[in-house]
Length: 465
Ligand code: NDP
Image (cartoon, rainbow, N blue to C red; front, side):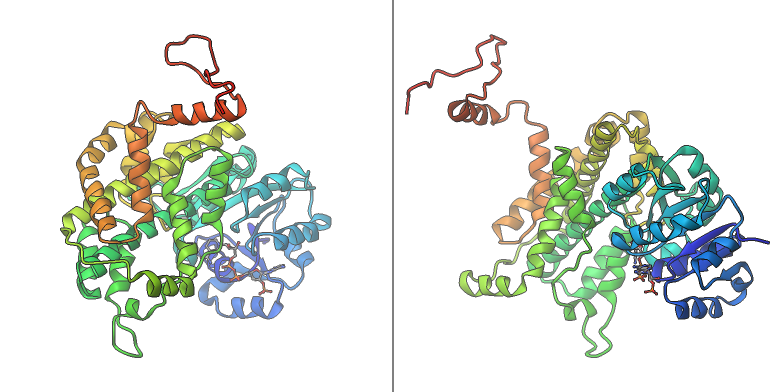
C-alpha cells in the first residue's frame, strides 16, 4: 500500500515529526537530501519502521505516496524551501499538496502561494522543539480550507492535547497566516523568557539568592497562576549542577543569548502594522545587548557595576511577573488582530489561544483564561476583559514596585519596564501627543485637530522663528 503522506528533510524536527506520524498509524514515505541520513533514520526507527518508507530519490518519494499526495517539507527556511518546491514541481500533479512546516517568514509563504505553484500549498507553523515534534507539537496551519481539511486528520492526530482533550492543531487562515501566528508565538516566547530572566536577575543580584533557592522559587510559582512550561524548565535548569565543576550549571553559562530571528521578525512586522508590542521589542533588544559582552564589560569598567542589592518579596516578584505576562500576551494578541485586519485573514483569536495551550514553548495555564476572555469579545484588548482587568488591578502595584525599586537599584529590566510604560500609556486619556502635533504643525504644517472640534487646524506660529 502507498504511504498516506510524505516528508522531506530528516533533520531534528523532520525525523521527530515522521516518527510521530508513523506512531499515530499513518504510513509515511521519507526523503532526505543526504541519503545516509535517510538510511540511518529508517534503521533507527524500531517497530515504527514498518510504517516508514525510506526513499532515495524525489521521484521515488512521490511514487511512494497515495495520490492526491501530501508532502511535508521540514528544511531550513528560505532558499532551501524555494529549491525544494522547484525540484518537486515537475514531479507533482496539480492536486498534490506541499506543506512547508519550517519556520518560514510568513511573507515568503504568502509570496510562494501567490506565485502560482503548480500544486496545492500550505504554510504550517510547528512549535514545541524536537520533543514537541516527536510527541505532540502545537500546529498552526495556513492555506485553503479544503487543503487543510485533507491533512487535518494527520495533524490533529500528531498534535499535543490540551487538558480538555482538544488537539492543538488548527487552520489559522489563508497561506501565510499559520507562519504569522507561529512568528508571534515566538515573539511572545522571547518576551516571556526575558521577563523570567529579569526576575531571575533580581533574585540573584538584588536579593543574593543562590541557584538552588531560585529554583525552589520558580518551582513554587509553577504551582500558581504562572504555571507554564517556561517557569517549569526555569526551575529545572536552575537546579542542575555542572558536571565539570559541581557548581550550578546556570552559573557556568555565558550571559550571551542566541537567536534565530523570529523574535526580530515579530518586532519588525509590528512596526509595519503600527501594533505596539514593546515587551517583545524589549526582549529582542535585550538579546542584542546580551550579545555585546565585550562592550558591557567595558561599560561596567567605566561606570561601575549596575545591579545593587534590592529587597523585594518573592510574592511581589511573582505578581509582577503575572502582570508582565498578561501585558505581553495582550500586546501579542492585539498584533495578531491588527494583522488579521490588514491582511483580511479573519484570524480566530480564541482558537489561537487554545492551540497554544499545549505542545508549544509558551504553553501555560493562563492561556485557558485568555481563550475564554477572547471568546467573550475578540475585538477587545485582553487587558480590558473583566477577568484580566481584575488580575491586573491586583498585580500592577507589584509590577510598579518591582520596576521602580529595581531601576533605583540599577537593574536592567527592559521588558518589565516597557510593559509598565505601555500600560500607563493605555490608561492615559489625555496624553502628551498634543505637543507632538504642535511641533509637527510648526515645522511641517501637518495640521492638528482641536479638542473643541473647531475647524482651525493650524497654530498661530507663522513667522515666530
Ligand atoms: P536541521 O538542521 O536539524 O535539519 C535540516 C534538514 O533540512 C536536514 O534534513 C537537511 O538535510 C535538510 N536540508 C538543509 N538544507 C537543505 C537544502 N538546501 N535542500 C534540501 N534539504 C536541505 O533543522 P531543524 O530540523 O531544526 O529545522 C527544520 C525547520 O524547522 C527549520 O525551518 C526550523 O526553523 C524549523 N523549526 C525548528 C525547531 C527546532 O526546535 N529545531 C522548532 C520549530 C521549527 P541534510 O541531512 O542533507 O543536511
